[in-house]
Length: 104
Image (cartoon, rainbow, N blue to C red; front, side, top):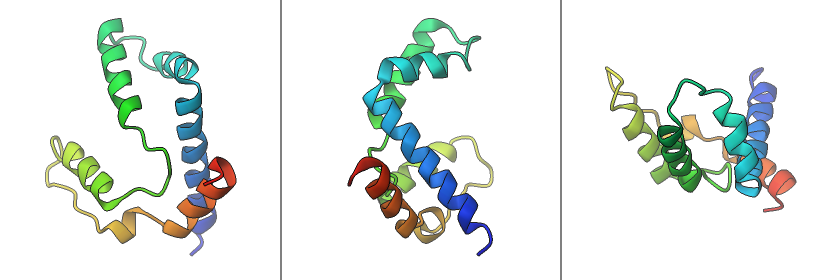
């Protein structure tokens, strides 16, 4: 229970980041690029475009989105990660952030 305020702030920050990336893709690309200077330009652009294309538009993720993320993570994790949807997503916080930040 005492982690809820921190979790709510995290969900809000992620929602702002999603909004920023979708509304300002060139600025988002520039900001992220600064963190990956060692990556070749073509490789970075390919990866960024892929992530931006699949970036959620809302913090309320679907079970399929969580499953897809787990599948990707588990390509390199041993033992594999498998968490219940109810542990990964906090619907009330996601809905609140979507309403306040995205107007959804």
